[in-house]
Image: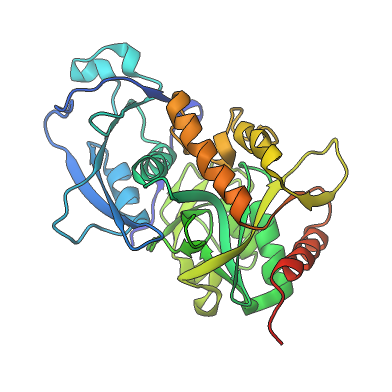
Length: 356
């Protein structure tokens, strides 16, 4: 693992919006390019194969390190073409710049004039949700096993999921084992949470600091992106192995969901915890409690390709099933993290008590 720091202009360090349009089967690749293929597990034993075509060594490296490689003979179900120059440089219209373009028919995404790897990561996540069968989901949030009981802390960016995860691990130690730190597959059929098998996690510097305050992290020791010596900058990220973050005893490959926790952070309201109902689906759909990226994170998941009524209704159906079939609470995370974590554990014990 060669350490380095890739820096984007500040205006490029934000996720591009996803838009839908027809794209030809022929990609705009010209000259030398790199192709990488990855294989992401579903929660029911399947695999989603994706390919990246790019002329950016940085994007190719982070893509290949972040996700498990495709070692099968199975062909990709979808392709991401990400080119570092603007569309005009490839003989295409400038209207293709400043967005991620998705074609449902050809299962392609085109991105131009951008080397911010965050756009590739959220595109991988969005494609997985697009390609997954209706009874499977990819949840944005930390999934874990607490004394073997599966729990997911979900919520929009900036709600404090990582802080709560750190508080739970401080209270419980190795009894709190991480399945996925930020995103992963989930089965609505049986509640299975499944590890994505990521060799390296693409994490924010502040998140690593919250989980591992003693660890020396910098671009000299970890491949990094947009690090400007400010450890609190949410745009600064690094690639780090899961075992280094959570330890051998702190990881679990799978768990059955026993409680779904929605974390919000509304400073205008007091700290609270209550049960979620089916009537709360609009609250989840709007993702309205965080302005971290200054945009809506549909269904608490900024990666989703919600580009039309059909895709919106698909995700609404999935979340309605989740709220109907599994215990769920919503927490306003505006007090001391350890106190909020204790309240969450109390609620978990009510719905899934430990066997004595």
